[in-house]
Length: 248
Image (spheres, rainbow, N blue to C red):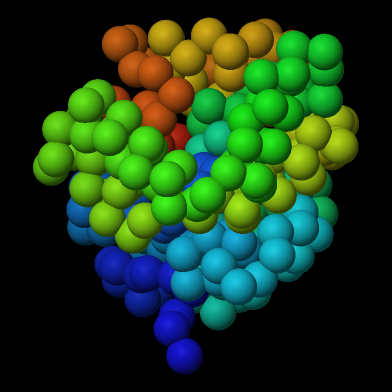
């Protein structure tokens, strides 16, 4: 059976668990795995509906339970959890539900409540991902990422393929929730980490910052939504600094 996560670094080291965005896989975290494994135990997992778990439907509850199992199995029961976009919303739910397992939360590119009037484009996107041919959508996404990043930088995104149905389910699930309440329920440290040019997903960053009990905000210059690929060094260093200060 294919394992649903990758691990590198010291088995007994302080752990960082990475949660990917919609329609891509754990491979998107390759730049951070390479940069952080010398100091931390770095773990990147697939969420339901994506990658190795493509046959499992995405539900927020099941996604959080999967993260909890991986933290217990691969991180000795406690980790800094880094979530990007869809993974950021999963991370907020995880922190609210399992605060004892989260040494800290890094919420990347997910500083907007997803249930407002402004989510119409994402509703349309979810319908397209759920109904249009996956193969055609995959070709379009591949072409876009290659044009934006070039072959080498895009490889962690395009190499495993795209999981449109899982991504569509993820959008629909998070749009039913209010995540400021979940962030407020987590008592530990929180880093909101956003790309400066990711305006849509920074819409409520000040509100989220005020909601978090022990939050701070960092904005990465010249980065768009997939900030860890846009600016891998700066993103990785922000995670490194936060993880060094986490409550282990």
